Length: 88
Image (tube, rainbow, N blue to C red; front, side, top):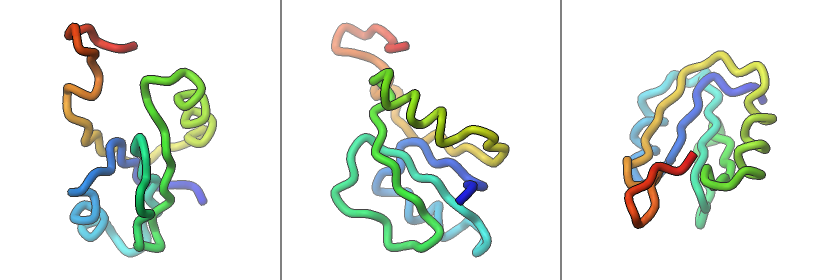
């Protein structure tokens, strides 16, 4: 499946976003851990910790050729550590 939409940080509000997207949408939903997979058939769930190099490499490989829409729903605190430094 080639996604048409990428949702980074697909948390508790993500199902509302999925419902607003067209029925033909193919959605790649990325979050650190999945306790329960989305019940929407259009959604492919990918567990990926964006602070880990190997997980980012896996996501990069999965998105090769992606030209869709990106929804960045991570809170700013997800990109920093306890000392307030930005993780790269």
